[in-house]
Image (cartoon, rainbow, N blue to C red; front, side, top):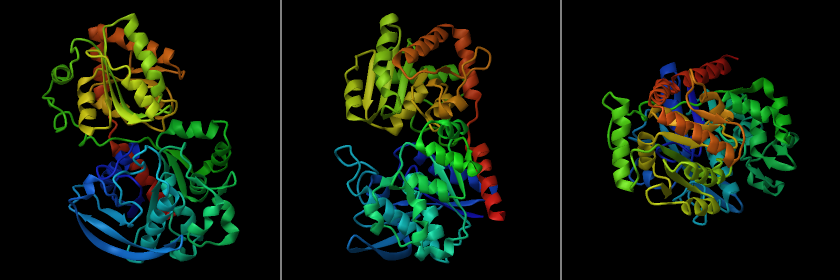
Length: 474
């Protein structure tokens, strides 16, 4: 069975968040279940693309806002991945050194045109009889119009019977646009225009939910939250509930292996205590922290969704009560939050990295004792899985995928959880974590339980494969 994943991210080629990790790992594990899963992403001008060799497998042109735009579908030769990666080369649209944001930290002014162009190019290639895919798997609103045009686009009639799978990595991003943009879309049958509409806009996410054969979120609890929340979209999800499922994300255990990870300074031989302590000492020496104290960390995008606004007050509260802790923060995003986090940097106590750096992220997982995830909502979350894989204990707000993966319990717990979305409850959870750290026997047991958790893609890939095969036979 052949499946094409259509996405704007795929690690290591292009990554802005968890979607990149998913699309870069899932196809590899699907192969074990008899699924040939290929991936197509836009061709960016970022570093990864510079030294690669490409083979053009398809080309064409389309008309957009008064101009004909030439494009090419290129297969990446020797990508280093365990699946075939294709790039949509659309000059003037994606040949930039960032995936979503310009130099000012805001989205590109032509975001609508870019997303439509990429979807149109992917559809045109799929429509070519040489591709022979059995199913299309679309990721987030940037590809949300594809299921509609497969059914109702004049140019793509050969795709009408092909099933489509739509994964929601973050339902907070809709891909809405004014109906003034209708002329930018491929031509379609007028009587079906209502399927594009939600809240009097062309709504990419809602369109995908209406038109895709199967819709899934990246954790069961996140789907429950979307369906039960009091919002206009919840009514849509309830109406389409028969085809909505939640499948928990996984991680690539080959990529995240303490014994072979080339991004960390000391690989694990056998002892977890030795592994954590050695990495902690190396990191401490490099950045001026005390390796004999408990370390709390945060890794991720700076946004209120991620609860970053609660970090500084919680850190201050924990430190003021007991100055026996260090804090490491890595991330970037909202400029106001970047300033807030930068302002709490304190030599020997708080180390901040206002950037995203994959190597430093791995080193934080290897050296820190706890990872903080105070998300207001979290579709799945991968950081808690990476952390547990590296013996770092999660402190999380119990929502979405965090609720599905982290349990606080004296007997079989894997971390510390709290319900509210304020800094006080985060600080209280951190204090409980600190108390456990000081109880060496219980802390060791907790860490052992974390390292024994298996969040490999194997189980999740099997669920996806079963869904694919069911659609093929329906």
